[in-house]
Image (cartoon, rainbow, N blue to C red; front, side, top):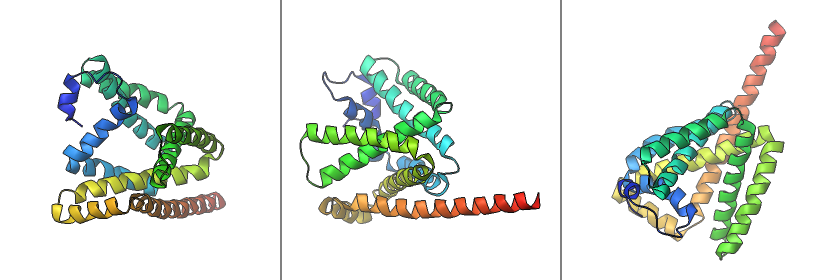
Length: 230
């Protein structure tokens, strides 16, 4: 893994997997700029957890702007043109498309999330082989797209909670990494128990889902009272 500045100046190796290119900017951010990662990820994670159902269209736009930034950065590195242009182009194109096509965008986001979660769970359970994990990811992606589109409202709550829990956990771990006395034991605990990050995300997602359901119920109650008064 190389710093972002160096990556912007050089073409990627021939045959380099696209997945590695897409993940490297995030890994660099977490590794080289943990404080910036925490400042970015923790507030966004809390927003996903608490207000995902209310703000899901905007959250889709934000998520796709982020994906556009990564895609633009990867395309700039691969094609050898200015990285800033690639970042701006990717963010604008995907940000604009996500708003009018938010249902399709939401389906793709759900599919990506399902693929990541099922692939990580399969890896933790000891499944090996790139082909096997790729097939699991592909099937999970298709299932995620279909379920997200058909069961839009309940899955908005679940998916935004999982995304929020993931971002919050990553931000918190980045913050903890700034203090070696605390970060060292945490890293050792995670290395010894690979299921621990998944468990933490699921607990945060469960809390977020419950809070969103309660918030939605309060909103419906207020609307009924307003209609009765009217």
